[in-house]
Length: 224
Image (cartoon, rainbow, N blue to C red):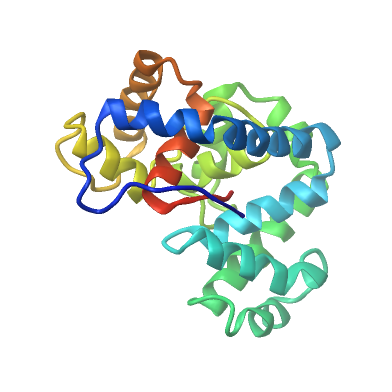
């Protein structure tokens, strides 16, 4: 975890503020993205599944809870029963039983369908097809568009916007969207994602860096 200066609650988010903040966090954002790309370069499907589990844990919860939960189950990530995983998650996650089910059922599906060859499976799909597979494959649990985008970004794949509450609030404060509520479907998600891309282009900020810039502007941290 890296701490950075965040905007005060009374300070309005403006494009000038984003540019100024970017100068302060650009190096940290690039280092974090390099860490994500290294995950993909290592090509370890066990590691990729760990990143997927992390995103199961962050859905509707915090990144810190996701990190804590992944560490709690890491010894049993690939072998634990649903009951064993749930026991490990008690005290680490708000929903230990549901999230244990996500991990267990998804893991078993991926083992049976592709031998847990997540990297090879993603390589067969195009940019948007990867996210659509993660969202629409019913035997993969707990990944809607935000979480699927989060997973793909965290394993080093570029060009996915993670439209969490902090990013949506920034866009609403900039009056680029009328409501910071999460997009309700894939079409709406892509529409808002394109608004974020246009903002990044206008400010001459790399799109993948933009997410970390806005997130850290709101939270004061650069996490995963």
